[in-house]
Every structure is written in C-alpha cells, then in structure tokens.
Image (cartoon, rainbow, N blue to C red; front, side, top):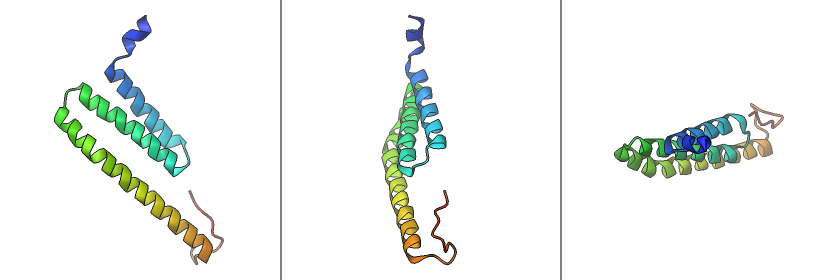
Length: 100
C-alpha cells in the first residue's frame, strides 16, 4: 500500500508532464507530437490546480485549446507546402526531399 501513498494529484501531474515532454522529443510524426503536447498541457493544468492557482488554471483552460488549434493549422499548412514543393520541384530543393 506504500505505492498508493505516492498517487496524489501532484505526482500524477508531474508524470503527465514528463510523459508529454518525452513523447514530444521522441516521436516523429507531427500529429503524435500534438497529442503529446495535449498530455503535457493536461499535466500542467493539473499541477496549477493542485497548487490552488485557480485564476491561472482558468487562463490555461481557455488558451490551451486555442493553442492546440493553432498548432494543428500550422501542421496542416506545413504539410501542404511540402507536398506542393515536391509536386512542383522547388529550385531550393530540386530532388523534392523532405527534411525533418
């Protein structure tokens, strides 16, 4: 039962933030990184709530989905530009290679 003493809101939020950060670093696909960013953001929100900064938590809860949508739109735009460059054969990238 010692393990159950470790499971409190603060430790769960720290675990979520670490999982999200390592997922962002290790995963390759942009949409997977976006999901890991959402996991990290959930851990941050939980940590802020556990320290009882509810006004800051309200701002995070309002701006979090907006930033996720902006990231998603930028990922879509970057993929469109890469596909267009491959199709047209960009002069800076004549082979049409995608650099990650």
